[in-house]
Image 1 (cartoon, rainbow, N blue to C red):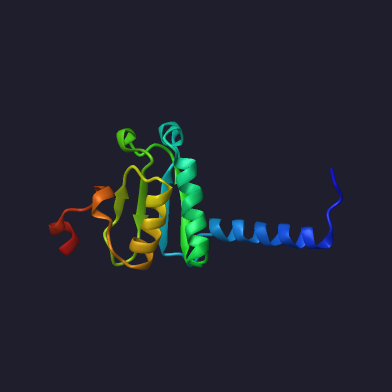
Image 2 (tube, rainbow, N blue to C red):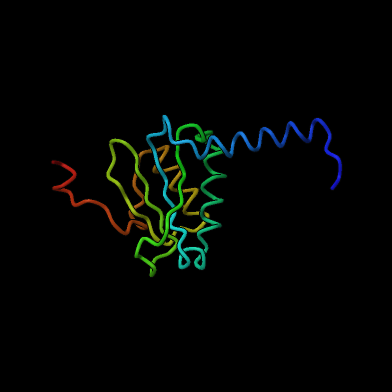
Length: 131
């Protein structure tokens, strides 16, 4: 193993700090849950997860959004699937979320507070959302 310089160690420390911040739930009201069951991974969920992390970095949302992984959501026909929870908005499950769609969810749903109707698989009925 090659010897690391002080700058290399600082870069490694900063990278690990960011990784730890992503996993901490305290103070984060927005959640993105990526289905990482076998079916999801086979359909490209790892690429989707990486795209979310990259887009959150680009929008500087690492401190306010919790990204979690879960198993199969039971929607194998539409993998990769992603559940998005934003306060004041209905909880939504998106399907067939590739890297481009993940970036669109971050920019339109998380930042712009607008739903992406063409990828929604499940959301509460309108009468439930009013009550």
